[in-house]
Amino acid sequence: MSAGDGAVAVAVPCVAPDYSGRVPHPDPAALAHAESLIAVIPDYPESGVLFRDIAPLLADAGALRTSIDALIAPFEGTFDVVAGIEARGFLLAGAAAVAAGVGLVPIRKAGKLPRPAASVDYALEYGTATIEMHDDIPRGTRVLLIDDVLATGGTLAAGRELVQRIGGEVAGITVLMELEALGGRAALADPAVHAVFRV
Image (cartoon, rainbow, N blue to C red; front, side):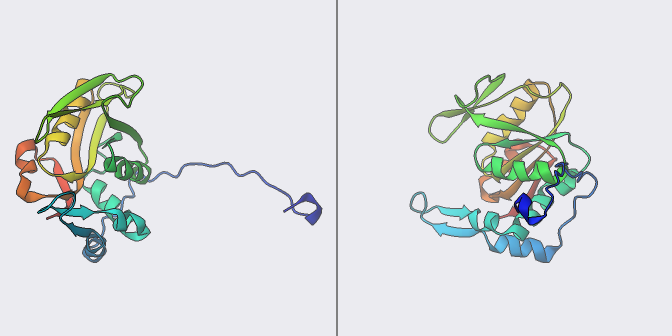
């Protein structure tokens, strides 16, 4: 409105809400609805592979909130920041950080950070890959590691090692979806691994 309308503009300070201690535990029906939105694409990216596309879940506000709450609820009060692994882990970690009222530390592919403090190589089916992170958190910070999928466990194991190298304490590992046939949980050998959906 313009000043000629008689309206008075009032500046309202933007204050981030405190969500700590208020993370809901989603009900089974809401979780089932969220899981039903994950699209299964046959023969992508290659023949014989069933690709699970979380984009429809991310596009549904209720399903996204339910999934984020389910990601972090088992760890409520045990972490100071979340760390998201590139790339879909960023999407989940950003939402989780806001929901939990904590900060976010990105874990990125090699060469994407201007001042990496640590890097870890991990094995792929053919060759190796590297992830890196900054050391923007104090030593002893409790970090909840977040990614979209637990497959063979290589990326999450590397992420866990990265957090430890910069002096952080891994509070837990949480993923949206676990592909059980690929054995990632056994490879991580960590009782603090949580998956919202297991397929």
